[in-house]
Image (cartoon, rainbow, N blue to C red):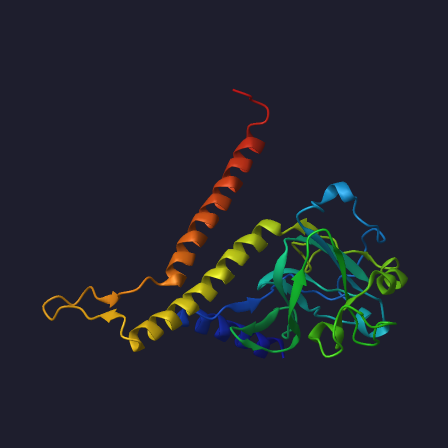
Length: 287
């Protein structure tokens, strides 16, 4: 079984390298379940308000109530935000992430392969527990609950009943529901063997860069549609027969103007990050 799983993971890795495009999801040495790596951190406490930027960001807690089924798990599922992996969701554990406002994509993939952590490649996933958009608002605190054995005591009134995060094993619950259970969970340590994670941190900067990337993709799609419409409407100049380059629309393309604005906003944001890092690194030398 182990040999076969290893062969599958290695084959997937080779295909990924050769193709050059699909993302390989492999959480090797990071996905041990509670059976192998029991959660032993401190019991739940809210982090201080001074520990996160409540004016500009949101705080998101993730917790998993204990159960006999979950405590016997060898491979714990991985949680991703906008396709970035942050932690394995072990039984009786909780953690948190500080996020920037905007649309975040919450995904959970379950590994298969006896500690190899192979979870899928590209759009293919061996087991995808949830894959849904989540609207984040600045200043708010959210709670995600994961359990395979029972459902929350009450539905979330802020979500339609058919919303992906209002059904299934992974749900966005209210603070009242969360308080009944999360206080019994323990903190998911970041350096636990076979279960290392990158949570309990602010990912706001990564979120904002992802926002720029998502907006760029949308504008590029709009640009292609707009160019096609201009060509059909006759607002197009073909290149000269003796020069294969040139040609194009004879009217301004709105999406191109928006892309230039986006470039400037992204450049300004990246420059502000670099400036902040420089100030932090030289706080001891004022000259």
